[in-house]
Image (cartoon, rainbow, N blue to C red; front, side):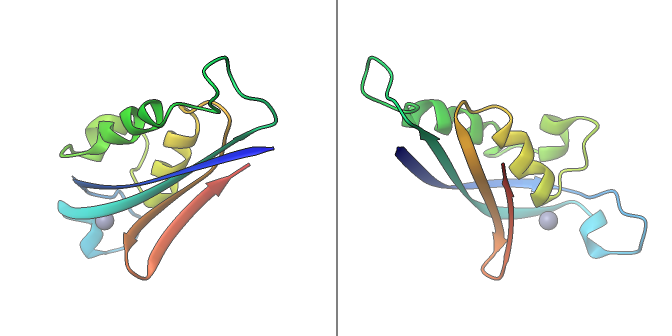
Length: 109
Ligand SMILES: [Zn+2]
């Protein structure tokens, strides 16, 4: 089994739709640290599970953008961002989105 992990830091902004009062409803920025893990029992003809560049291109859609614009009708919580990225990368098994040093959301199969 081959496992590849890519970690990236991106800067962006979002505001959350919540059913309780929170400062997160106001527009604010994050330096998100996104960690993507892909896994497969075989490699493609280039000797890769997934090209690091393909992972980077998906994650970079959020870089210097408003996550609400990227995710449209989906509330851009760290949890939903992790799932959104997971759904767009082949052979993905886990995505973690770290908002702050102590706050990390993970989606995994
Ligand atoms: Zn936030």
